[in-house]
Image (cartoon, rainbow, N blue to C red; front, side, top):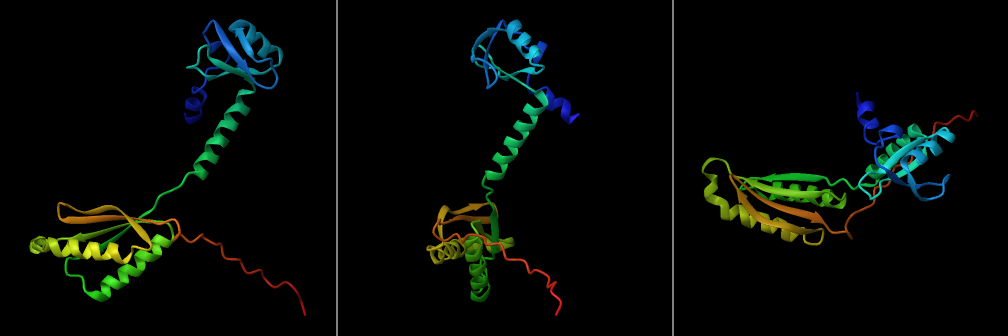
Length: 192
């Protein structure tokens, strides 16, 4: 089922129904050809005519082995996904009357998250009537952002959404520590 969808992504051979195509590739002379002639050239080489850019005028085609072409496209997409940056958001929750010990504990965690390159979303959760202390929650979040000033920059100032007051912090580039893989211990195979 999945392979059928992948195969339908590109039109090949007789499915190409335009009067002329632009041929590109290493085994042909680049230029504009009648579709019939391009199909004949592909058949002579025992390869497929693959439409790689259908929106161009005329559509761009390549003479290649279709299975090999699909494999290369899949490989290229996998490489792009591997190079893409994944943004991690870590959340830290406070109460409006969080004491100093808990605050410092969460502050240390936030520093380590920022050094790893993760964004930090700190929020104060107001339960029941504690919403009366929203100024206290805002002061707590601003103090938190102020103490992390050398590690992070503020993306979003404290914002009250329902029963949560949230602040977003992202790491400064100078703070991020590169992840170093630990060497694995090799078993001792020598006999004494």
